[in-house]
Image: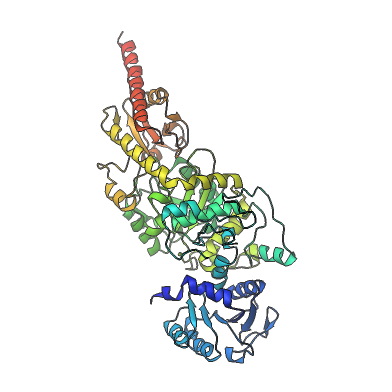
Amino acid sequence: MFDLSRYQDRETIRHVLDSAKTIAVVGLSTNELRASHFVGFYLKRHGYRVIPVNPREREVLGQTSYRNLSDVPHPVDIVNVFRAPDALPAIAEEAVTIGAKTLWCQFTVINEKGARIAEDGGLSVIMDLCIKVEHARYRGRMHWLGFNTQRVTSVRGGLQ
Amino acid sequence: MEEESRRLGFETRQVHAGQRPDPNTGARAVPIYQTTSFVFEDSESAAAYFNLQEYGNTYSRIMNPTVAAFEERVANLEGGCGAVAFASGIAAQAAALFTLLSPGDHVVSSSALYGGSVNQLKHYLRKMSVELTWVDPDDTNAWQAAVRENTKAFFAETIGNPGGNVLDIEKVAAIAHKHQLPLLVDNTFATPFLCRPIQWGADIVLHSATKFIGGHGTSIGGVVVESGKFNWSNGRFPVVADPSPAYHGLQFHETFGTYGYLMKLRFETLRDLGAAMTPFNAFLFLQGLETLSLRMARHVENAAAVARYLESNELASNVTYPGLPTSLYHPLVEKYLPGGAGAVFSFDCRGGREAGMHFIEGVTLWSHLANVGDAKSLIIHPASTTHRQLDDDELRAAGVGPGTIRLSVGLEDIDDLLWDLDQGFRQAAGAAGSKEAACST
């Protein structure tokens, strides 16, 4: 496997989470038990505009679902991918075309070609990390459940 | 300004990890959140917490901010992805096992364990219709040979209690992983300062926090750490991977990935067994962790000196301190425990059970009690106490003879500890001498 660490940079993750407003979730399911639904629900709760991209759904989390990224009529900051790794190059190309700023690939959505397409198109790439976990690590309450956030600070208000 | 993206040292993390200044009050020490429950922001938040859609505090049987600070600190020091604390080490162990076992399953365990663990594995697992095979932990072929179709876990201690067996973690983990099984390691005697089993391939690390983590003999507690790397969806663990009837069909491993086992451990096993750590004990354990490296360095230094003293004393034999250059485990100590081989070990007192008893009664600094890992030096006769429920074969397998005495070496002046042992031997010899004299007249 190629070196994923370049796609897991802490500074990039923090910048992406802080600057994004709109997140297109590719593969977002209406099934409340699916990981994509947990993530979409969480992101919406934390103030992001969540846009479902899934040809098999008409509406998810109260939002119209689009067949593909090109159909989304709003500017997209993050393309968040819950699909098989093989689907990534095509999604990355679309993400470049629509001018998204970041391609965020969930746990195990690992595809080197897809990452390179997005990177060459000027996008930040995060890979094999969960956007919900990273949000909870840097801006949320992951530490409330005893998870290792790997964060240390003595600054008051530096962490929630 | 955000914290630097640098790898912080162990001693920085033992003081800081898991705990940040309280955002509301600025309190620098961890506040003791002595509360059963937490007010919800609104109905939607309440529902999101109970649906596990949001990280939130609901009820202190399941999570508590003081306990969470302790959990994260241990997880950080062990290099795991998270931790769940329990009311005792034994509760932590039971919960770690019950989360991954179903009736009809099988566990392979080292036979060189703390007597309380032997009881739990032998009797309680049987009660839950789980089969068990004991293996000599030093015999890697025995681990391999014990694996069956229904085997679900390997279990061992980093440093066996009280025999001092040092586990070849990397080798045993490799065998476990070849069969798609997790290796559970009780790291109580080493602490994360001396050994981090996850680094060598262990999947789950357990602690009785009661011991060196607390360090002062004040509180009972336990903790389970998971690496987050084990594939619970490999087909052998439907109990972790399949839809959970307790959460409307939620598939913990698929949905939470790396955190799936720990989520299940907390939101099913801890929720349903109820052996939660109290916030006050978590506070005391956090205080303990802040000085862990300092205390362990001294524990190890004193233990090595006591072991050397006993090895050169003709009234003692079979000194099981693995840190001795003469120990069978010396090569494993060099690999897994380069900072020292812990501070708990045993020796046999010449004169057997009787002499051992007189020895224990003769010492005045070493406390005769059933615990280890205190700042104070401790002494006990395992065959009649901690390992009392074991039969003769099990005692032998655990390295316990009739005259075996277990020591937990504390932080006192080493000269005083050795002086006290010396006078204990004199008392034992005196008692034996007067008995001989009585017999000869």
